[in-house]
Length: 226
Figure 1 (cartoon, rainbow, N blue to C red):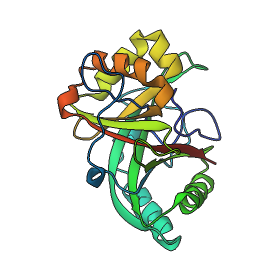
Figure 2: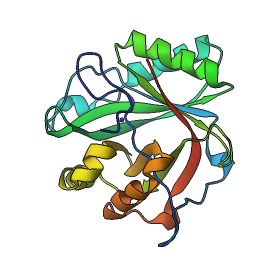
Figure 3: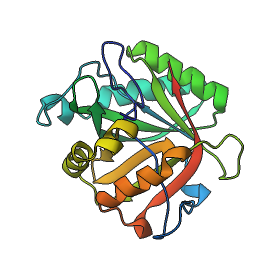
């Protein structure tokens, strides 16, 4: 979702929420153990219909369930020849270099099947234009050894949005380079980031108390589509 997963046309942050990337299991390893491919959809898309900059964690806009937005995006996915899967609510916490403070985002992550790279980019472009987003983040699950793999996605339980906020604000390196991340309604961290940022991402997620024994890590290709 800063690790700008999507940027709003009016200002910064964006729609995709989501988040940084990481991986790694084990205290000495610098490579994440991949989760089974069966747990990763063909593609994921992170998006919001919000165009405001939200700095108050108690802002009522962060409580919306984006129900209508969910239906509309699923229809866009279907209309453009792909298969809409499940979606989940996210609360993103991002660092704004312009505002010098943490900002918040309410968004959804959409699973998509029966779609290739070009089709996914087209769908993301339609969503970006429809909801006035500067860009929308996509992630395609790929084998670790694929030449197209350039990022990691990690999901780990036991992380609150408040904890993510506090650790982000307290870590100037992570907030400037990684930018932020997202948390699901049931307290699962969702982070997407370049493979090159793995060491820093590993250090930051350790501060969040991530238990790598319960984490799921996927490799793939991320793109910001405008």
